[in-house]
Length: 564
Image (cartoon, rainbow, N blue to C red; front, side, top):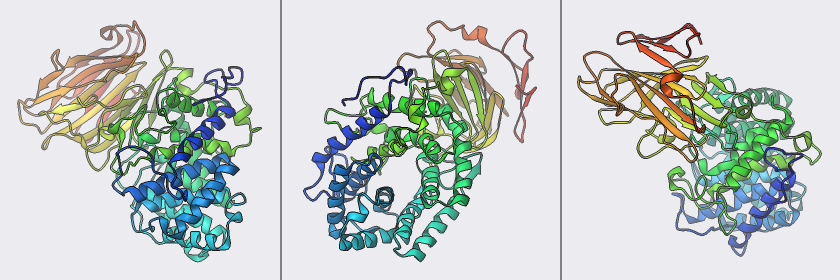
């Protein structure tokens, strides 16, 4: 990908400016064009992989997601090509939008793109094409959505169709229904769970905030924009901390192949004026993420986005991931809707949170603890509240970071009786420097977990109850990544192999862990002192001149005193 020279005056940290974003968008759009069908209604990218929706749906996905990029870029030439594809698609090429079908997802991208480029694209279409397109999109108004972020796709379609005067009553009902539905999943402090349960991931940004905020902004609905904008602004307080100094987003959750779509809430806050971040920090975080992926083989030799995180990587894919799925990354170019003279483009880059200082930040809604260190720019996420409906290494591990990925050897896990599963996660609270939860392990075993963090050091404590006496227990730590070292030190109930066994009643297991980019850190034995007081109480001292922190495991929860 050919990009302009870095500008280290305006962007001292990334070198990227608006020109880099424009060049990246143009390059991605040029690269996909050879893979369009003759009528331009479908885009079939090379490779053997297909999603579970089939080749036709995958081709529609290729059209819809790259159209969204053209819409953000406002590229007249590209938009004309997509106008031709739209005319062909709604003349019988595209599959119908049916209940819980992938075309419902892609209809939202098409509708949003048409709404954003109405004068350049929609208004120039023949009446017959417009009528057929509206009728095709109209099926989205009544199609049943999966009970998650999918509820917002009819909202997005309804916003466009209502604006052009098509099925206004049905459009209004679809909007109201979807917005009412997501209220059930708003858990406060700017966070949604993606459907029932406790599924916290990037869908907060690239779906749960994006669609309602953009709809309110485009509809000029001040009441809705005030409500959703306030939620977005609060979310960004936490969200900005999920990026490492190298630009990497946190490696957690599903659909990670969307990559720099993680920048969506950053741009959305600037676009709508609902952000706590200075404009220079917004651009630094967003440009950092784009640069991070472009520098690490996200784009192949043909200029196409690959199915993976850096290069191709099937471990981050789901059954719905088709060859065009990575192009939801197009959402990351939302910032191009901001004019070139907007302060987010003209301000000098400012450092992100991971670059400014060491920090341990509790996030109550998902029951997470974020731990970042300025010396190496790493961010670690301690997960004590997020899980999917099934065991998923990208949801249910104890910790994630911006420099590691879940390993097949069950890193960051408590393994009871050879079983690494962690289900029915119950948050027990977060506080200054700590987070706690309870979960079900192998069989009927219950585990209460606490992590305490300072700098790059973590104390991980587990109280295991309900397991058969003699059940083996193992504690694992970080899987080391490039340029970082992972350490794990047994403290209580574990031998040098980080293994122990349960006895009668409850058993306490404690280890000290560290993930660091420092070449010569203080030895873990000197960084923290840990002392067990019986089977249910623990003392932690971070320094000789600091008070001992007591951790008490009770039947109802965990007590930390004095508060850190």
